[in-house]
Image (tube, rainbow, N blue to C red; front, side, top):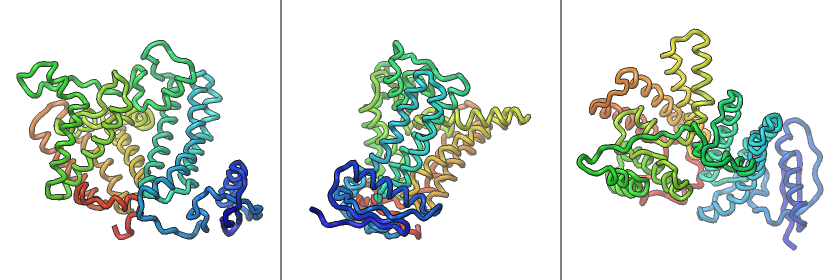
Amino acid sequence: MSAPISLRHKHSSINFQNVDLLTQTHTLCLYLRAVLLAPLSRLPSFPSLPLPFFPRQYLMAPHSVPVLEDDVLHQLLTDLPPALISLAIPGFLMYLSLWAFAKRWRVVFVVLSVPTLVGFWVSGLVAPVRCAALKALLRFTVAAGTMKLLDVHALSLKSSFPSYSAGSPPRPSIMALILLTELRLESFTPNPIRHTPTPKFPPGTSTSFRESFYSEPVQLIVHLALFAILQVSPQFLWVKALGILFTIWILWTSCQLVLRYKTSPPLFGPIWRADSLAGFWVETWHNAFASPCLNLTYTPVFFILTKLGSPRAFARATAVVSGFGLMAWFHVYALEPLLSQEGKWRIGVFFIGNGIFTVVEVAIWGKKRHWLRALIAWAIELSLSSWAVAAIEVADGVLAADWRGLCRVPSAGR
């Protein structure tokens, strides 16, 4: 028998000793309900029941702030189970809603989507996760799942959902799993995946050589080498900014190589090939969230502005910036546990600024490629990213990183 552990709140309290898992889960739900609904009504106290498996640091009064452990691995292992549990329910509901969509049960699809979205957003509030990095990952999943489900709704409302083109349509249970896991809708046509021609650099080489050179495994090695050079270079702000770009490129590409289909096109283009802002965001950077940006912001904003009589050029430019605005919200929300107020503000401005400068660049240069355009684009990109990085706690290289600080909340002064 373990010693009783108390879980107290000003409107409820629970004492826990050994009982079965079902009772423990039920009691925890009652406690969370009491905490969440306390502002609305005074709820009665609940009986004494045990919860010995639940970490002691979570069984404190909600207003107390426990000290994070220096052992990051242990902290992650402690926080990961409740994070996964908090996402399991809305994740399963999302699968059921997509299954109903695949079955063409539109009313059921809409009805199930409501608790799915509520479950995603409540999970970020009730999950007892203290590690800042894991909180950010949890928020990333919540935001991505929300955009994914709303994107399917937007496409279905327009009766323009892409057709399955990877063979014979699978049964609804498999179709729902495909819809749940494919960010780029690779098994459907049309989809937001770009199909850029193989660059002609280096000149004088065969097509087969260039195709091999620009393949994801080879480019991963190239970017790892460039990343290593950045790590041993003086850590100016623009070097740190480039290091972050390369880190994201390497991590996402590594995951892509493990999870991709055999026929999947590259997720990124080579960073070192970017020669314009438009080219960077359309051809170089990943387009995993291109579909939500198109269907949730660009298309409705363009439609509304043109209906109101705005010039098409103005409507298109505003719609492009609105897409960057959605990505600004996405990154600010996801990274909130890791950023100070100033950092969140600068991340938002970084994306909005990229949208504005991209619109201006296209208005001036169109589709013309020129070395001056590339120089200006990189000057703007590095200036914006360096300004944003200045408000973020970024280590002077990987070797100097404080990995134990991954779970700590950023200081208020930064």
